[in-house]
Length: 167
Image (cartoon, rainbow, N blue to C red; front, side):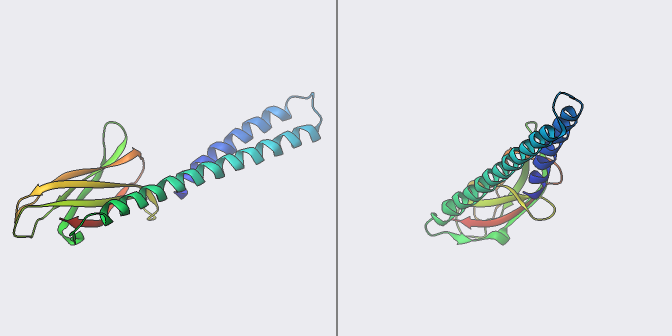
């Protein structure tokens, strides 16, 4: 999240620098008018960045809560996080982060899995979350599925299994 906020702040500040530079070369406004306009734009840019960061943070919190709700709603499920292997993160053709997961069914009959995968940056900041269902994995066998971020992610994106339920 911090990286996104820094990028948005950088974009807002770049716009401010461009605006301030244009205002200084205008000549028709006095220095106090230009400074006042620049301060106003800076204030608006700061508010916009804060608002965007807040919306993004709220969306991630909402997505995490929804994932938790889905997994908590599974009746008779068993926590099997250790039975799920996660592959490397790649980017699909649309710019979404993906990671292949492989749950192993150690039960005596066919079972399904629901797996929550969080996509993070190297600092551990949450970028996105996904819940993947792997249906009807035979006893003693493995299933496969792909977790995909809900939005485009770039840079060094990592994935981790947060929770896995076998049912």
